[in-house]
Image 1 (cartoon, rainbow, N blue to C red):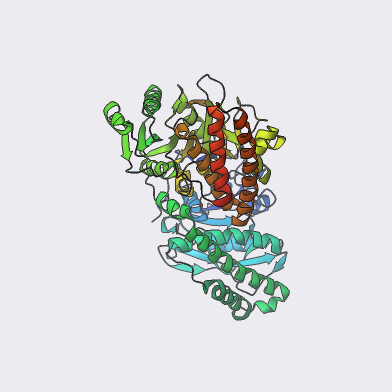
Image 2: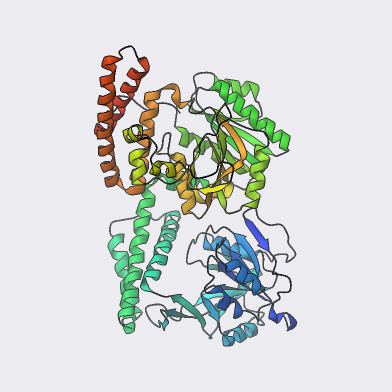
Length: 615
């Protein structure tokens, strides 16, 4: 049950940021009799509508705005209206509303959306209603305007919403990602005055929003244990259309009623389509494991996945422990060993007794092993560090301070350097069809670094300045714990390579930023583990890239790319093989031809003659 919060509370969650109203700004009602009501509005980039919304709430004791890091003038407009603005990343609407309740210092709370308007008549009814000591909450009818027209049928009217309730008596059901519901401890009543809702300006806007709601509904269905049957694709949409168009008299709205009823049927179809995708996607089960992570009990967890690099592993662990101690940061190190044959696990036990060691009987791949470590991690910040990498002094203090200042960043990549101190480029932009054809294919070896590749490699960015990027390479990945809970870990389908590319994309899709931060530095002995078998390394790279493109672009596009790239590799392999006739003693050239032959064979047949190689 929700508690009545202390209005003087000053501690803020790590992923939120609060500002007080601008000096001199005050609620016009402050000189009148207190209403005992705080109005709460959730926002993100709503500068066009928020001023009218807040102007209609001047009668409330206070206004709290929980903003999802808007990048327009939303925050400034709210502060000009005397609202207290708290910034917090949106995980789900229910979680955002429950968070808002902790910032309410009055007995009653009124939740209003930014596209809603409280009329003077409704405001008067609300202020009168809260004097009834026997009632815990009130349902408010909404007047839904679609393109300026009041929709009174098809389930759109009276559209009662439980928005006004006692803070000590209500909270939102956390299992509802969208269309959230209040768990009310006490009796409720219905008000009569209408809450005006400027719903959608067009059918296109409506459909765009319903597509997002369908994804959230699919997650709820999954967590409820529902699974897709073929009849769901037909019967659920038909039921939705019948209910809205016939039972709820959507036909009385004419063509608009038909369009809205059909759109809601489409919403049902999309929800089950997304549910089917969740059933097929291994990351769904990974997300289920991560979403129940307990609260952090230390500042930083460092997860290292190792395979046959005992000397470098010791250096990596030593650099981490030294920097944590130097900074006075409460941290831990977790090593997940993928069945190393060089005594790595025994060396860790002997030299670093404070390190938590997880040993696998077989090599399960980098992504799966990293997930094991992250699930065991107790830190607020989780760092996934390669075994052939080590952190420079000041690393952990820098990332902790930077993430505290930038709560909208979900994942961070540090400045990576080679052993000689030169920069190792580690940030990237998203793959396009052009860069898939070019990067690490014969086209790049023939034509060099084209403009498309320069953009992909972020050559235009200054490595001494922090920047938002699409993804960062996996030598060192720094993530917030709340990101793990919201997104999950690595997709286990990627044995090695592209797991970080996919992870960064999912993190950005969830609304977080991915950033490059040069204020923290790490040394990386590039690919020491993977380079133990160059043919296996090449095969793993191209297998994973094909899997990534199938996931991103669909199987047909991935298949076409595979055929064309395979032919390119065949031509290049023949060209290099011809050189061996002249340079018979060049062992490096002969090894390169063998690698090209295996890659060509895999691209064109799916068979390579080689199994997966350890990480």
